[in-house]
Length: 318
Image 1 (cartoon, rainbow, N blue to C red):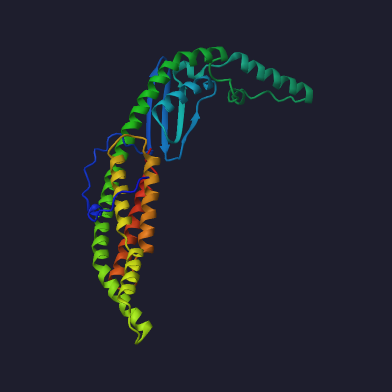
Image 2 (cartoon, helix red, strand yellow):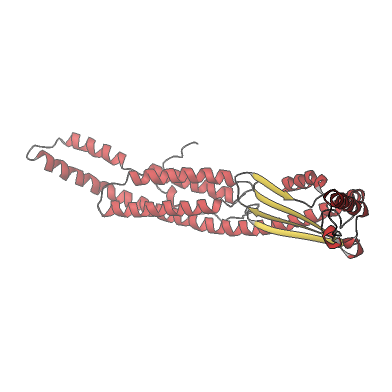
């Protein structure tokens, strides 16, 4: 990344307003349903944050042929997050209690064979037979036809569900964006205070250095040129203007990404790492334990805290 030029006022530049256009949270829930011709269909989706796109799909037995189409539709609309997608299909009316005669007959034949083999005289329980898999419901051939018939309805419900999820994720994203902008404003405000304190502390630091050297040397005379050189070197090591300038640049870039398009979560996370690095360097260069140094340390810790709070919010951005 190109380092910005050192400018004393860059750390206190005002923040622009955000349009929050396109920014989406990875957290949300939505569902859609349809009822017709003796059956009902419901699709639901629950989304939470994840580094990549992770789709978990649950469909009724026999509806597996629809899985590739469902996954494709979801991937076209969502880039990142852990998604639980559930499809529920229920028969209504007479079709809901239809008996699959062939399956029931096969179960009864198996029961009869076991009775003869082991000499069991008890009659089979019809209610228990009806609870066995595949006895209640349409036959396999009819189910295949039903799946093909409801595919268009599944696609339509998926579209409605994803539209509703988009609305919720956009609302969550806008709320996260407003909170992050407030924290960015606080970082800029605190950085401005650090800049003022650092400029005020520089001459005092040079004077303290001269006093300390005189104490160490006793009665020996100080070489003014050597003193000036040492003071300049020590001041450079404790100068935080470059860190503040880079921090301001990262804040501006972060702000620009928040105001722009979607799919910026990973870029925001990278910028936060850079901001945290600058705040760490700022703290390591804080001059001494005098009043100004202690205050700069406190302000630097506040900057780190705000960055960490923003990081928590960014974890939910797509």
